[in-house]
Image 1 (tube, rainbow, N blue to C red):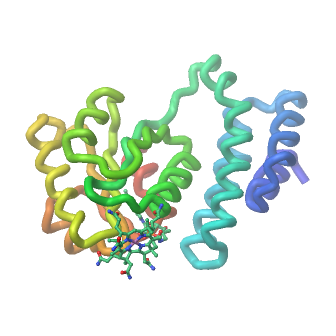
Image 2: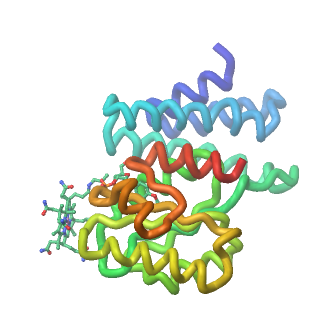
Length: 210
Ligand code: B1M
């Protein structure tokens, strides 16, 4: 089995130490860091994302796989930076104001990072202004908003309005999600994208940044 397949399979099983060991081995064998990322770590995380979407694996498996992914990616980061390989783009992510639920938001973060995208995590209880300020500060391409309460969903409309007011409508896409959020709601508030789960959010984010 090729070392890149070994990396992908160890990641899918959440075997962090093994992922680190294989990434090191691949580097010693002269495999390019970008190839390790694109053909080892990222496809491994894609498999986990798909299985999660299909209810074949659940939150704990995603968490351990994401930890393994991050450990492998940490080894590559300085080498990728040296080689001038940047991230495909940036997402500012948070749970909207008044809402403290963050389990789904954290899954979205892991899946999106699994696509090589940089995520600036603003945490929970994030106001529309704070989303927009952070997007400006970090030059983000996407604002991702999560809401779990029907009472906090209207904050997503405020985010869309704040993006427009800041003159960022053409630059920054607003993605929304969370259990009570729907495609219909997304259209009604003028957000750019709605996705039902973390794996789809990551796929759509990667598409936006292509
Ligand atoms: Co709360 N809670 N909760 N809660 N809680 C719900 C959401 C609720 C449905 C329970 C119920 O009554 N049946 C209900 C909301 C009702 C409503 O609004 N209609 C509710 C309530 C009422 C409350 C409180 C008001 C309770 C109280 O104090 N009286 C309170 C509110 C606090 C606040 O936020 N201000 C509260 C508090 C809490 C805890 C702190 C105890 C805890 C949160 C812990 C934490 O997050 N750190 C909690 C929990 C755990 C839940 C339930 C049980 C589980 C939520 C969860 O994490 N699901 C929930 C009931 C339920 O769903 N069974 C409930 C798992 C998670 C993986 O799913 O977040 O949907 P989810 O994320 C999914 C997708 O939605 C999507 O991807 C993820 C998976 O792939 N997704 C995105 C999420 N964000 C996305 C963003 C995207 C794209 C996709 O793009 C950017």
